[in-house]
Amino acid sequence: MKSLKKYGTVALCLSLSASLASCTPAIGANTVSALTVDGYDVPAGMFIYYTIQGYNEAADIVANQNDGSEVKAKDIRSSNIDSISSTDWIQNKATEYCVEFTNIMHEYDAIGAELTQEEKEQAAEMAEYYYNMNPLLAENGVSLDSMLKMAENTYKEQAVFEYYYGFDGADGCSEEELKNYFDENYARVKYVTISLTDEEGEKVSADEERKLRNMADKYVKQINAKSSELNKMLEVNAVQEDYNEYVASQTTTAEDEEEVTTTTTTTTTTASPDETTVTTTTNPYESERLIQKNTTTAASEAGTMDSATESADDTESTEETEDEKNSRLFNEFIFNDLPLGEAKVYDYSDDTIYVIIRGDLRERMTEDDYWSESYINNLRSQRYYESFTEKLDAKAEQLEVEKNKSAYRRYDPFKLVLENQA
Image 1 (cartoon, rainbow, N blue to C red):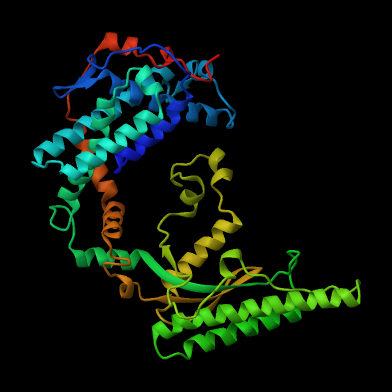
Image 2 (image 1 turned 90 degrees about the horizontal axis):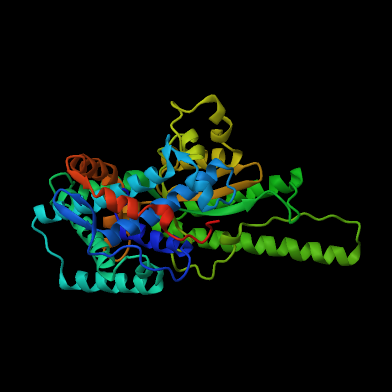
C-alpha cells in the first residue's frame, strides 16, 4: 500500500484534480465498472478518480524530466515513463490503486471488523466536504458514493493495520517494547543557540568569540549545578534569558557608540529566531525539541537514492552539503555522545555553538503528553509501515484482475479535458 492513511491520497488527488477544465459532460456513468478485482466490480467513477491521480503523478515525472519546466497535456501524452507510454503508465497506476482499495476491503472483511457509527459519520462528512469542494468530480463521472467508499476505506485500512500491529496483534509488539522503540529513536533536547557572527553576518572578533565560549562554559556549569534533571531543564530557561539580555545589551551598546562616532565598528551576537523569546522560567518543557534519530546514509538523505545503486552521473546530486553534514553530526552527537541530564557545549558550525541538554524521554511518556493515542498510533505506523506495505502488496499480487478493455479505452486519461491541455 502507498499510504497508511489512504484518505491523505484522496485529499491530494482532489486538490490535483482542480486542473480539470470546467463544465464538461460526464464521460462515464458510475454504474459501469472499469475492472473487476477478485470478483469486486470497481465503479467507473473510482477508476476515473484514480486516473486523475495517475495523470498528475505522470505530470510531475515528466516535469522533472524537463528540469522542472511546466508541461502541458500534449507533452505528457507524447512522453514515455518507465519505458512505456504515459497513457499505459497512468492507467496502470489507476489499476494499482483500485487493486489496493479492493485488497483493503477483502482484508477488512476477513478480520470480521465493522465500522462504528462514528466512523461512518466521519467518513460521510469527509466525502461530502471534498466532493462539494470540487464539482468537477461529478462532471467527470465520479459519484459521491465512490467518494464515500474511498473515505470509509481509510478507516478500514487503519483497522487492518491495528489487527496485525496493535498491542494485541499477531505481528505487533507490547506497549513496553514500543516505549523502548520510542526511547531508542527519539530524544528530547533543549538548547540555547549562541551565534558567533555579528548582526551583519560577519564572524565576530577573536576576543568576542573567546568571551562567548567562556559564557557557554559558564552556562553549562550553571545548568549542571542543579540537583535534578527537572531543575536543569528549568535552568536552561534562565540561561536563555541571560543570553538574550546579553544580546540586547550588545545591540544597545552598538547603538550608543554609533551616536558618538560613525567610524567605530561594534560586533554583536544574535540568536536564531526561535531561540530568543522566553517569557517564563517556570515551564521546564518550554522550547524543548523532539529529535528523531537519523538512520539513513548521507547519500540517501541528500538524494533519496541508494548509494550502492547510484550512477556516476548522480554523484553530484547526492553529495552531502555542509548544512546536511552539520545536521548529521549534530544528530550523531545527541544519540551517541550526549548523556541524559548533563549539559554540554556543542560546536554546531563555524558560526554557531549550542548549550544543550538531553532529558529522559520516558518522563514524558504519559497519556496527556508523549504517550497519547495519537503518539502511539504514529509510532506503530512508523515502526511497522514497511512490513505492513510488504504484507499487503504480497496479498494484492494474488488478486485476480479483469480489465474492461472498452472501459479503459473510454476512460483514456487524455480524453479528460485538462486545464493545461493545448
